[in-house]
Length: 295
Image (cartoon, rainbow, N blue to C red; front, side, top):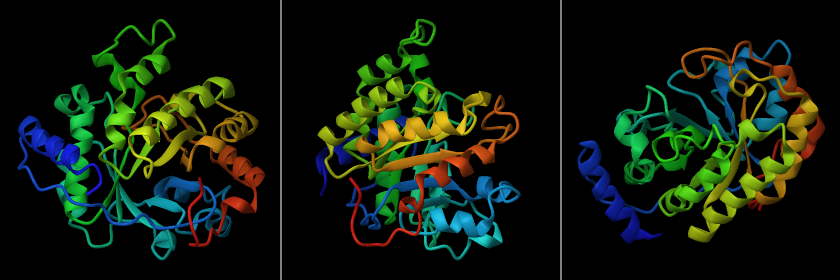
């Protein structure tokens, strides 16, 4: 069992902390193999982007085992037969039970953030919550990818953002390394730094090293966004961030957010930025074959 004693202890601790029954930790299922960059993309966001990002072009880039396709309960019709890894997302442990019992789900994103959708107990101890989520997912034969937000720092370093030290403060928590011991993948929410490629690379590199030191087999992805928290970025800026970080990650979570419950300040989505970036990355990112793993 990979880090079995640690996973089991934290699963038991999580049962006490979060008021859900403790379960026996198990080995995770195998991660689908691929060549090329791995991606996390949201089917709903892609569907909203069809007016500038045609379905055939989306399939060229993302219809492969390299993609974790976040679908929710009802994926749009054009995405149901993709050869991608069917993935559901939840911001809270309470949503896991329903997700892991779905036969078609292969992977789960657990996304704790400093927002009302994640319970306070899970925000103040995100490592225990993540390892609890992993134990639940693995017990049902699902993969677990942890995507902790940098804003969880408000509970341990509330002044870090005000002093421009939030990424350094997040690194010092050691959360990514501790989570990597329990999970199959971690996503580093670095999208807020993407306009500064040097900062983006430094943060992603530090966290990736921390994760792999704890678990050499863990997948490491970095977050990128076409409009992080409502701020406009150009395709060139986003491409530069990808190029800066790609040597140290397995792939990226490409966000095309729209204003709403999960991103109140995001405003209108900017899918044209995503299209331009993907076109620049070229054919290497699309239609990946299942013959190994990019590192």
